Image 1 (tube, helix red, strand yellow):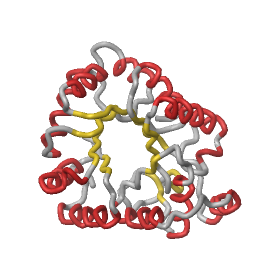
Image 2: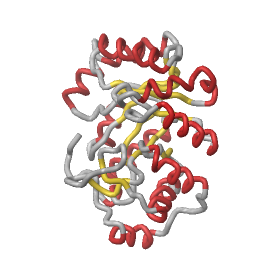
Image 3: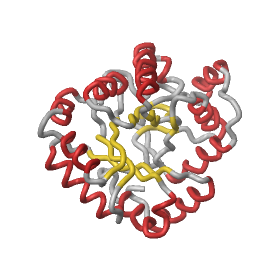
Amino acid sequence: MGSVTQDDADCTLEILLKYGVNHIDTAASYGNSELRIGSWMKEYRNNFFLATKTDKRTYREAKEELHRSLDRLKVDYVDLWQMHLLVDPEEWNIAIHSGGAIDAFIEAKEQGLTRFLGVTGHGLAAPSMHLRSLERYDFDSVLLPYNYVLMQNHNYAAEFEKLIEMCAGRNVAIQTIKSIARGPLGNKHSNHAVWYDPLEEDEAIEHAVKWVLGNRNVFLNTVGDIHLLGKVLKAADHYDAIPKDEIMRADLQKYGITPLFSKEEI
């Protein structure tokens, strides 16, 4: 909702309430998203588990951005505050060590400005970097890409399974994104508020969403586009079973699905 009008945002709220969505995930860097969500909070704060993120890596910058987020969201606290895109080793070293964002995160939890702390990431390095983060600090949640074509990458899948094992043992929530990614945007023009090429066909979205929901170890975070949101929630609402492997393989060709990440990129 970074670039939509407040009227469009309010229509999205109606969809969330219709489907019983109780978790909103945003970030300080998502344009005006926090402002749009903030207008709902006076009446609906108790309806939602509210999460935001910072990509700042030092104590001072992260602390300042959290207070800005709280002001924009019009709340006294968030339920989950996350280190955004923490996959670059150099940034990780700054954020996780003394004087880094981790100090602001621990302080915020002690002060009641957030209930839980998490870390997020994109790219093929995300599972291994999240494992590294969890070895350094007992985060409450991780967030990373997860879809059928991505899990055909054996290295990514192996690291993802290691992450599942660690998170299960420590009661860490695994949030997943990019469920309906068709592939990189490349030179295509997108009519949607996402930086990749998303699936648009109802059948393709249904299969992709149900495939993620078939893994009981993970949560599915919806697409960041209000016009595709309803299709994702409809598919989730009709979940019955995970699609068979032959269906998912057929979709790769039928809908031109390709890996979103092809190298160790951020």
